[in-house]
Amino acid sequence: MTVSALSDRDLAETAKLSREPSLRPARRVIELRRGGQALGGSYLYEGDGLITGWHSHEVHQIEYALHGVVEVETDFAHYLLPPQQAAWIPAGLEHQAVMNPDVKTVAVMFDPALVAAPGDRARILAVSPLIREMMIYALRWQIDRADGDAEDEKVSDGFFHTLANLVSEALDHEAPLSLPTTEHPIVAAAMAFTKAHLDSVSADDVSRAVSVSERTLRRLFQDTLGLSWRTYLLHARMLRAMALLAAPGQSVQQTASAVGFDSLSSFTRAFAHFCGETPSTYRKRVAGE
Image (cartoon, rainbow, N blue to C red; front, top):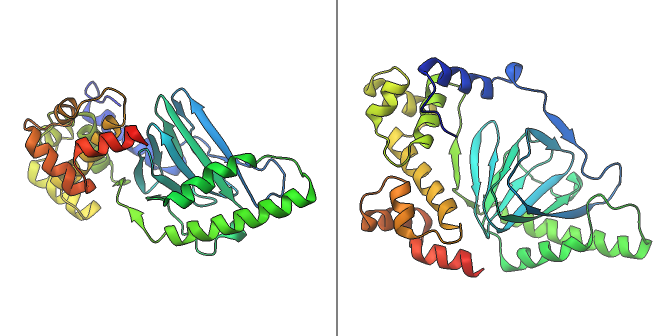
């Protein structure tokens, strides 16, 4: 999103419209089973970029990025789903997903009765190889399938019970791949401006864009989000870097410059501290898998 052409008032109004329920378009409830009674099922998405729009499901969903990058936004946070990670979205949670170009994901859905403690928010999970292979295997059972052979349904019910138990355990191991959101119009506008100018943004730039002093900006971030603007900037840069490095042909040097690092060594240190591996290692792993 580009916000450089917006006025300060436009920034604040954009943030307000996106956060206040009374000002948002109606959000859909999508019945993925289409009236069926399957305890579990799946679907595969592979194609061009897509913005789903705000919606919720009647079933729990775990979505695994086989290739490319997916972004998931809720009223409480903005999540990045890089390749080889999974997003957990509990039933009834309003959200929208942005499928970046050249993305391929597999999603598995569960009847709410299968997961005892689903929580009420989205999470990004580092899934085990076993869960990954079971999610791919689950593609033989589509979520919107009609009632099939009784013996096959018995097999699928047992399969999804087992996978649901594994996913329930994985929910305790969350990856910190999200940015907070807020209904505070000034902070929301400052966050939008920051994300749109990661290559060169400064606290002074942001404070002037939202018409507050730099001191007030820092206080508002700490009071509203519980973290400093500087920490928010770093996290936004690291998440953007992960998304960029997942793209074919993207170099580490290009990525470092795109997210505002003049020094390759300082970018490498920051990335390794945030992700637990160097940018080069991450890029090779994502490409190899």
